[in-house]
Length: 438
Image (tube, one colour):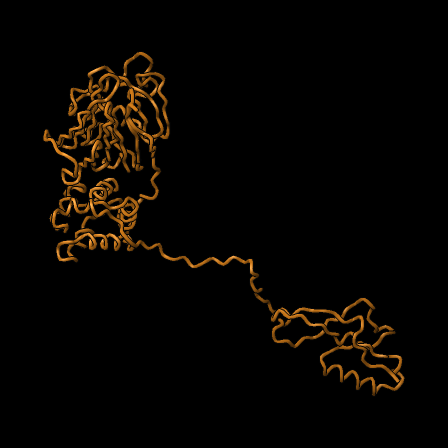
């Protein structure tokens, strides 16, 4: 007798099914133990019968355990497989991702919702009926964008402040719709027309959201490429202490009773009265308009005293001891601290009008990335001299910045009020800084 199959032999092994993730224990046909010596002598017919039987099962079997055709003891024979989940030879298979394979989510659009403007500021412009009329909106557009109705980045920033639009919203609207660096004010008047020539606050906010969530395909604003020069502590205060646009720090006591120019730019002039090592009054000239604020707490606009509130079509705001003056390029904040005044400057682009600023503070907004540190109480090592050098100890360079009065715009040295002398860089330069005695 002979033993044809011997299950449970040492040839039995464990394998995994990659298609279903299951594990099977089986004895492949190649491990069947045929008692070759027992049946070989019965003749070739039996041998052929068994071979045919094995071939029909799909297994090659072990045809001999001795002789030249016998496989080596340690050489496994790969079984033939007809499992449809298994790959056929030479067929590439894309592996199934493992649980740790990161999957990038499909990006979703950044959509603005909610309130993106200040209702109280809107009401100041809209008036007692709290409804913005077409002529009121056009007046604001013309004030900040000029007669052509097209805003630069700095002009639109000023308009946004006057209308109560948040800075983030203003920047996004400009970036979404400005073409060649200009935002057409007709985008806003079109929204007015769509609302029958007037808008309440909710309609105004809805119009802004529409601009935020749409985009002009021709927009090519570079507002996102600006390299800001922002120093939140930049100011003029103290003796007075100057903090420049690029982190500059210096002191200028000045001469008692003298008036000095702090900022001179095209159409904008800021002068300060220095008394007893402090600034006691600040005068701001914007075009033909004159704004004065001093230690007496009085705000004068073109010689007329006004109280708290928004004035000059949104260009001037007074709240207690703080006055804010907004121009096309600047936001100028003046504070009365009881014994001294401080003045803070900020701008998205001091070069927007094609003229670079100057003045005791204004010269630091030059975009050169250099923070200068003064060495004395007279601007030594920081201030630019008339001949182009830098102030040296004892040369009293600060006196070159003295002007006739708080609203003097005709002085000779470093005067930029009429747009003369220096062309601006093509790179936007944002800046902030302060002059304070604190």
